[in-house]
Image (cartoon, rainbow, N blue to C red):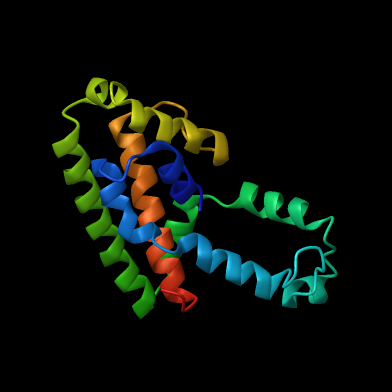
Length: 169
């Protein structure tokens, strides 16, 4: 969600990075809102979702639960765990997706930005990355082509593969 929100705040629809990521962010917020209703809160403030009932999560503690889980999530660790399950068809396929996303994003960013300085001179991209740093725990603060590539690859992989795993792609 953080990349989707940062995209909407920072990029025009014609920006090349917006166009690069948009297919992986399309309808993400809507899907996640619907999932949160089913899991936590069908009507704002009622805390009547499946997990709310099972774990006795009240409406006033929901934000704490979300922030704690978000703080523990690490995109790199998620990618590593999904792609390293022995004898798993999902893991094998995930490695192929990850390699494909990595090559696609890397070649795209290298074509758009010849060096880190050209990246820093793009105000929309700089704003996008600043928003991500503010929203994502442990996001590298140094803004480089490599840190941008890693972030976008993890986003694409997570949004595509994770939603496929949970059946919402």
